[in-house]
Amino acid sequence: MSPGSELGLDQTPFTIRPYQPGDGEAVSEICRQSPEAAQWTKESYDQAHSLGQIVLIAELNAQVCGFLVARITADEAEILNTAVATAHRHKSIGTALLSAAVSAAHAQKAKSIYLEVRESNSAAIAFYAKHGFAKSAQRRAYYSSPTENAVVMKKLTA
Image (cartoon, rainbow, N blue to C red; front, side, top):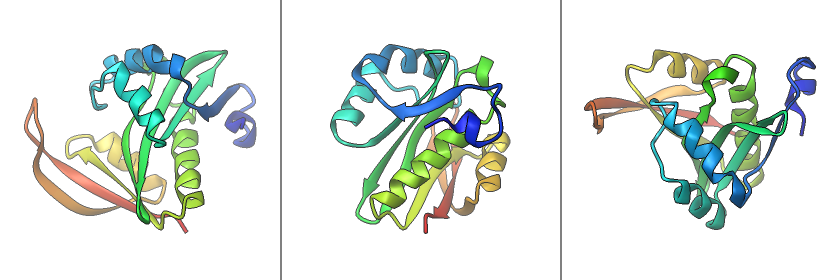
């Protein structure tokens, strides 16, 4: 898959591919540089992959530059974690990861896809809204360090 070409962004030759066991260190480093992302261990990504969850990697010039992890439960999907390396943001990589995850969830018969985002993360809320997600609920004191509400967002996949 070459989203850079599909989106008319030939100057951004990134690809979206499935996670491979050797990707854990690069994904962990992106996560460490992205305080808004859930801070998982390297082993957590391998475990998500081994459990058959949707684990996608964005790659630019043979380097991992973003990731997204989602799971399917019954007919619902949930985005669990995602980030794009700071140097590669605003290049449609997050959009391509999200689009690929929604497509994968739909292919696995998920009728809707959910995510939680910090209430203060207005950039993420706007990003997801731009891509068809709508606020559906709030979870009080969901996050810690600092304690903060979560905004639950939902999108229908069909």
